[in-house]
Length: 419
Image (spheres, rainbow, N blue to C red):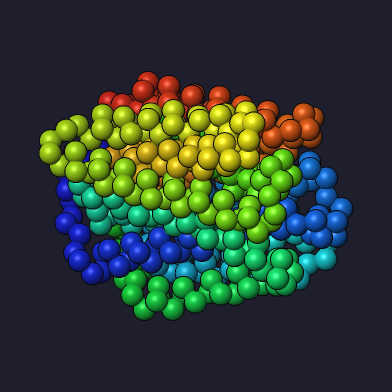
């Protein structure tokens, strides 16, 4: 486990590449959540004759291929670097997003979502592999917070833009525009990112280092299982917000599609800002000599408990109260965001195991997305209300808080052999 400052980030190249990774993550979330706005559009639903259960399964299609490809993508970045694997996958998911606007059958929609999910599986293993190789412990919280802003501002920006494009033009143009415009990111990435595709000597060395970490040693670690539980519980809430929040605001709270996009923006902007601030604050406390694991765990537990206020929104009798707690609960979850990422993917993980460990953990994140989208659709179908899906969210958040206190301990980190 690497807890000391291994590298002091330089002003321009390190933080500049981190900024590019953040924007790449932002684009990935815009493309993965654009479907949620379409599913709140009556014309889109009518064209494909979708039920609430159908909408849940369509929302979840992305997460099944996304989860399936996590381990292979972790393996790829551990051995072949970040720059070129990321660039190739980025091109594929942007193209698939654009093609979504051209399909005419439900099967075509599902196929495009599966391609987007498989290609986007590179993002998190690659990003945390890069952070682990370039950031020390006193910068990991801030780095994770900055990166997480991409995952939160993606739906925050994407939801109102997608809603505007649908209302002003059509759902078809929305998919084409969001997919093709994202490709502009590739140019600065290819120009600025260091070419870390290894030659024969470097490839042999990376294989030797990677061989010091086995999947068995990863899966034997209680920290990994604790991290997977945390990722699932955290992801269940955030993916519910990404997939069902626009429909909830339109169908149960009576907002227009345009206004629902605006409140989705407030919710995800709030969690992004708090996540970065909490990551930075934890870094400063750690820099003053406090135990890194204890500090980050405290923030994570506070975030899970704060997110549980979503139940107050479910039971609010006024629109204003419902909107307030809808925004506040996701914002408070930001206390956990960066510190959970830093704790589970960096602080408690040996550097040579980051790619594989992150891939394993992302399986739980993907499962959370699939289960949240489909289970929430089924719960909505059987109850006729969004109250029951929100109660299930609270159960998972409280499980996450308890799990953080019990399983995430340094003595249970993955063991690696000498390379």
